[in-house]
Image (cartoon, rainbow, N blue to C red; front, side, top):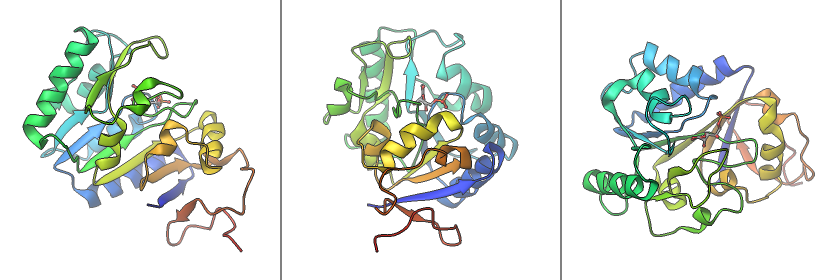
Length: 235
Ligand code: 6PG
């Protein structure tokens, strides 16, 4: 499965493009990531009244109360209210993970297929709460798990890699120069967690491309029609 890449000139432009792709996908079920990058996207979705009929789920959560500043529940409910099926970060992580898995299975069955997954990428190449070298990356049975270690300060609850890859569409929304090193590594074929989600469309801004890749002649991405080819193709 190839990846598709859309390069925009600013986070605002990337948010606009991602909105168009989400409108095209017109998802009934969508899972949203936390973090700060997607804020312009979520603000635009809210302003345009998009996702009003969608079932909104979370990709991951930090194990903190919902009013904690690091809570993804707090972030997502700011834009989408209590329609968000929230992970209960205030509960013991394994309890929260089990409850969320039951809720997903009740709606989507034991092999859930979300219509759309909106993912981010950390500076280390993590996505969801699947971090480089973590045991959670190897989980192939469970739908939702709790991390066995804290990451970036918190224990977390996260969808697992098979669920991310099973989605009908995956959109990575990644902006900012800090993401460039991990992005270059993924283009070079390093299997960082975000590089293990295949068939995704990556909406990025240009600073994400600011680190040259070591093997520019290896085709890693299908530039979108009309976008300049960002890499020389295999000659
Ligand atoms: C989380 C997110 C996580 C996020 C990346 C990027 O809870 O942290 O779900 O996967 O997408 O950490 O975060 P930023 O957008 O803040 O860089």
